[in-house]
Image (tube, rainbow, N blue to C red; front, top):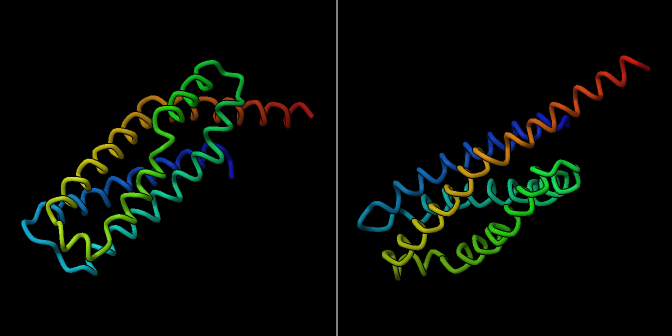
Length: 154
């Protein structure tokens, strides 16, 4: 997949995570827990989308940026990994801790922790959209232009 398409897909996943976060925020705004199946469905979609997204960033985007030779890209990738590399493990721990039974037993605790998790995800998405992805797009477009020029010269 061309690198620019990969970044477009990552941006689309950000939009999906934000949408699912809004659904979950609506559910936790209620004084009482929703039906367990409803909560499990939204949490499951969020978990699956987030895990897929973080793997792509961790295994493809960040290593590529770190190896790009571009000082800004290398610095940003290192900063994001250092500051936020724990989000996947933090989310997995949150998800495992809050079983259906635990949610039912401590709805207020689940609501508070879920709000904190969603806030952290939102902050990461905002920072990546504002700082990291524009740099990745710039490098991807430059690489595509270079590739076209090389093919044209051959």
